Picture 1 (cartoon, rainbow, N blue to C red):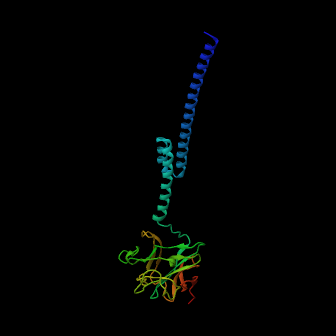
Picture 2 (picture 1 turned 120 degrees about the vertical axis):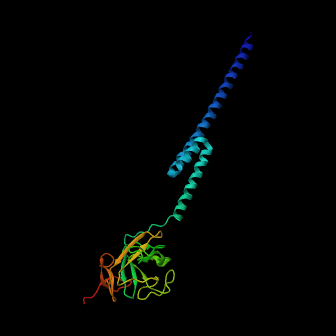
Length: 255
């Protein structure tokens, strides 16, 4: 074999080796691309898992099934979570903070009214809350049929403020009212009055009729012009006071 022939054979062998190496390198690069996709899929799964607990299982399953599709599934789950949050705000009843709200003063004996007082530093929204008196056929329980619902801006009791309810009105009317004498307007009217001789109970009810607050007034506890009042105003036990609708309670003048 001549030197020329030997050189030609070696060149062919070298070309074959280089081509084989190139194929391996391409395969390795392609494998690297798969690894990158897998990493992306794993990252999507982790992101979905941290969006909210209820979505974790769905996002993880989607990521395990296929790389790219798993990422899209994670994004869809996150959007669903946002929708659930919005729905929760719309459907769940609002929490009513009654820490500082009290039934503060009650007048009976033919001039029937109830005063609520907010002694806190934030307004209290009583939207949907109802007020009722005692069911005479089932003592100790509220008479739901006659309960009056607080609605609108008048249902918001400002900090340090009062909500006035004028009882024994015919017709009572629905919603806030402008005729509120002797108390401040706007107020709410009830069709029921309070029993002086037998005593009575005033109830505040949640929208689901759970009793939030109640105050019992004993027989002949307060005769006009006196009222059944918290003394001192907003915080004390009940006693006989001077009528102060929409203002701070004061003890009754000595006889």
